[in-house]
Image 1 (spheres, rainbow, N blue to C red):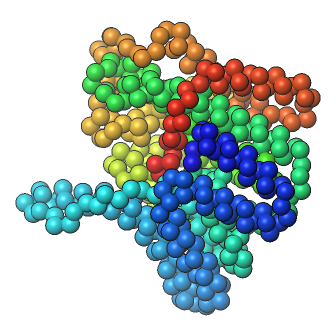
Image 2: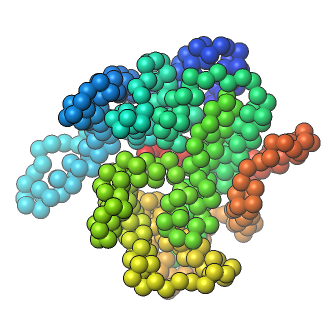
Image 3: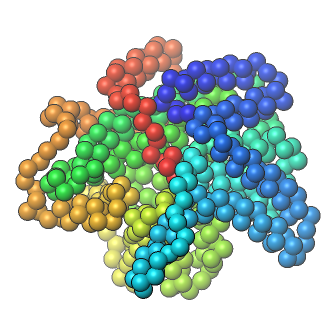
Length: 466
């Protein structure tokens, strides 16, 4: 069920009204059943995967907690294998098999194992990582096993962040499910405003920019470098508004019921370095990799070159997490290389830019350029298309013959909504809910006008594919 659909509007209204009409235990059951319905709206049979991993992890946590020595690692290993196993089968099997086939063909051998036509369960990577964080935290003795099976199930399946995050930790979310939140009009206002802003990002900005992006990236050979450059810049804002818009709506839906989900974005395109970018972009995932991969690899407690290798490994695996494609692996590796180069420069060259406005603008522009060019691999359909797009962008001979599905007026409108987006994100990160009712009438009016210019296609969110 998509947040930007009529079906979800009715679902959201009914669930929210029922939620505040029930006592605590009734709310827990309501949210679990509603979350099951929400997930089954995509493909009902895949809820069986969720049920299996929930049961495995629920009992594994108790066994981990009671065990000692190596047995703790064994039970944790069983939990992780169960979770990662489904990822490997549904998300990576065909990719691995195709690469094996390619290697065998070079030696004149035919791979006897066929690819399987398995459809990736929606949001599999997100709820898998959330489930894994629970058993890992129990293993580290940072979290006691959750005795209530229904509440643990809700921790994995909570509908606002089930299919695209934020990826929560048990320390933050499990305790909230044990809390009875009284009706609070401030929560209602904060939730609805956050939902409205997220919907604005998705419908008015992301889906409109997607028209230009799809127009160019679906047939890159037919377009000039200038056209592809603009489409690539548009994609930077499309993916940001699409994904952060979903996070805003998820946070808003939860907030309306009293729950606090972690922030997932913090104006990433004003970052002055790649390191800062990753402290602002997809925060729940980057901190997940830091806690559960980077630190176990040794973190910053190792030598200089091992530290560089750790960063490269983490970012490359992060790319693979996004999808079974060499494009995603290259995208992740590029960010790892960017970060390692910056660290090496800072340690061995030590040249520091002056602290002034011009220097800040240049650093932001340079970081945005690196991030934007790396998005080419993220969006392009195949490695050859990505290389074609990049070569056309950097080849100034191809800058003639600009084309667009938009009129000049529509292009200016796209630029205007991007400017409005950035100004709001930078200077008004959160709406002040202490404003008067007249303010909210104006706010809703502006939103309605903006939605009029939106693209109402019920486009699926980009990160649903991961």
